[in-house]
Image 1 (cartoon, protein in one colour):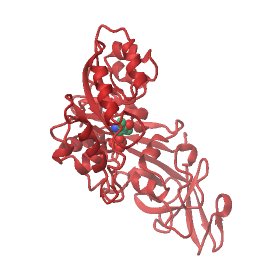
Image 2 (tube, helix red, strand yellow):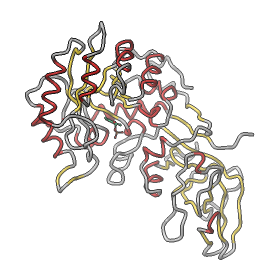
Image 3 (cartoon, protein in one colour):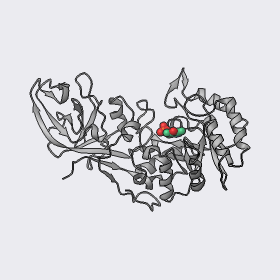
Image 4 (cartoon, helix red, strand yellow):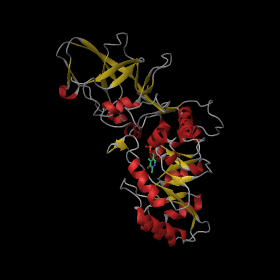
Length: 389
Ligand SMILES: *Cc1c(COP(=O)(O)O)cnc(C)c1O
């Protein structure tokens, strides 16, 4: 028998979450951001759930080739554009739209031979200071692009650093919005501003409305502004469940320790369960199982409990005090949907991430290759020709 750990992917949750994004930005076209292999879910696995998007945004050229091979004829946007001049050949061949964020990319375009002019998204650095042109440089970049026969339509794009929160006493997008509007107000072209947090928190604001929005983390069912709001607040459904089983139990006496470093000691006689899941599966090793804090939440047979002791490579331990009936074979939910027959049982990945001092993005992307993945059947999703892997 294989190790009992499995990740389940729920493509219908992706379709649902994208529909929620549309509700918040009803006039915009919707990019589903599927970089990092659909945030660790697997592009092919979530495919049926993506078909309601207007475009697919990613940054790895191999992933762009995959979505074309899957039959996607709609827009594909390379969020970081070309990494070297010959990437533009693939853009021409596969009709990929691409970000232009630096002078070098403009020079590569000027030297590029293509029959088909490219649609480009000129990136403004409105304050994040990773990619893009600042105000005055943006205008000059726009003019140079506009003069190139290799360029068809020029759209404008920027990315928010603090859309999930406030900054300097005002909402977190205000400072960038001011910079963007000032630099671009008389430039023509479509705009794309919002990531998940901006879609959910500010999608309805007139000054944030734009032609395209970019839904990343919300697509996968995590709340970008957790813990201020949780996934239930935003009506998002988890697209990934990580579950395993108990492979042993131990009866501890007062003072007995658990795992490496004896990081947990039993304060009283207690029963613990050993779960077939460890950091080599992608579970965060820094998830606390300690004395002083509440530990990291976990479900056993749909009942909420917590981890105890350090996470090891292949195993972790859970407190069975709230689940006296649990034994070998009991189902353990590390995150996502609880077992069938326990309606409403859900362990938001955001809660696990928070306990471990990280964000859901990192946990999803870290799902290890050794974990077998099942794709839930997707009859509920409309118009699906493709099936998961
Ligand atoms: C990753 C990314 C997004 C999506 O961000 P989320 O917070 O996951 O919604 C949007 N735009 C750009 C440029 C990105 O790199």
